Image (cartoon, rainbow, N blue to C red; front, side, top):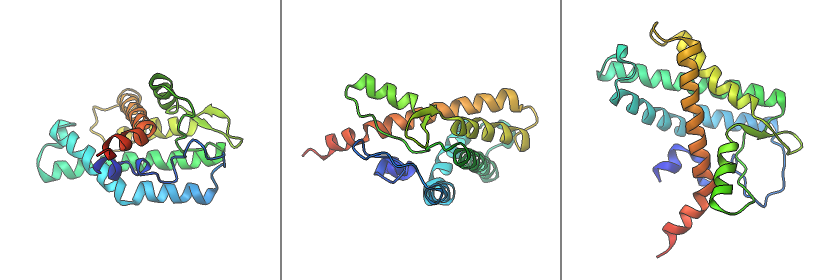
Length: 194
């Protein structure tokens, strides 16, 4: 249940398509609704709090210290990075006609489905439903991280070095989320067996 709350697409929301659904490009209204829900909805607050708690437990960055003030800075930083990422992806995706949804694989087999999920981290669909590099998603991940390190991280952080490193981590997490999205129907079936 916690996974579904943190990642609403796992519950079958409109940003994850069933394999048999014929392709329909997202409208600007769809894009805006996803942006508002993903950036300002309860899932964003839970996701931010969860990741900020992990950062706080690791004392990362140490300049922000411990206690409630340190946790507050980490939560605000994580939320700011996430909001920047979503905003860049919304604008870039609309401009380039990229589909931000995860499209489950129509294939079978663990390795083929896993490969599809991981490739979908950096590949999107264009307005015709054809695969295209996910420029908006990639720009959002790296742009959000680089802007955050430039604007509010401690001065020892650099946009090029640390921003790129944080973007790599975010992209890796996106790949993991896609794996869960791909196999979520199978996981649910295993737990429904009584």
